[in-house]
Length: 279
Image 1 (cartoon, rainbow, N blue to C red):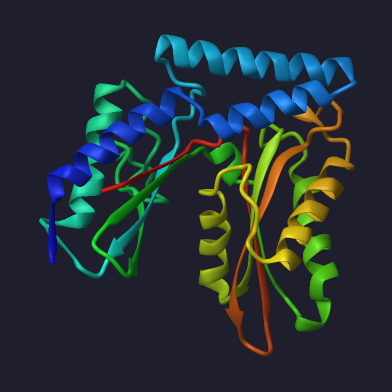
Image 2: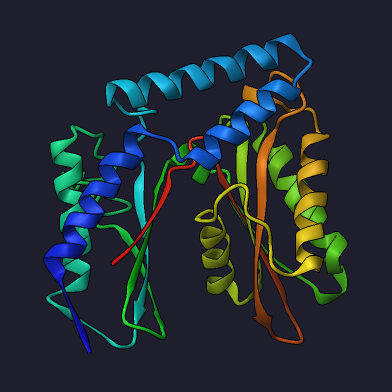
């Protein structure tokens, strides 16, 4: 049995939050540059140039990429041979609290959804833990802005809707979102499970690198088809037209009931702040 101090988890979360707020992962930067080079519509190319410049200035100056520094999504894969010496939930929240205080990051979390009192420290994080074999803890974080989160959708499709029903639902969600989520966007799609599980799958998809591919050839092809169809909508960067409405579409699936076909679409703007570290 390997022991990991809760303080080590706190420190890792703190460091990743500070890093994610000011610096985009390389996979996102590379896809943005590739999209800029592929654009032949001048306004779209100019917008992508501005986005890339903004990201580079943020990293060089250690200032937030976006004013919305997000609600922290923390996904922890905890090895079954690990003993965490301390309170895991408190350790994650303490890391968030320290980062948002030390980095002067905008604190966007309200402690009650209707009474709207700001929590004052951007806590709590949205924590999901998954037990896995081994003696390691894998910490994946996403700093999720809500301009794009608010454009997300979930639908309990019928099994007879099939693949085309999923495609239609994703496309309709993107079209209804239009320019609101600050395209180019990253799209996480969950298929299967249940009402609650499918939303979790869509969120989990956004933790993947943008240049990753689905290990299942069937869903890899679905991801490619969805990306092509979304970009054919012509919404383009910031909704002003162009080839690049989405940078990536990533699909995660789970077995489901014979009577159901849940589908969820979780949208992220280009500021896809996802980070991972293994302890």
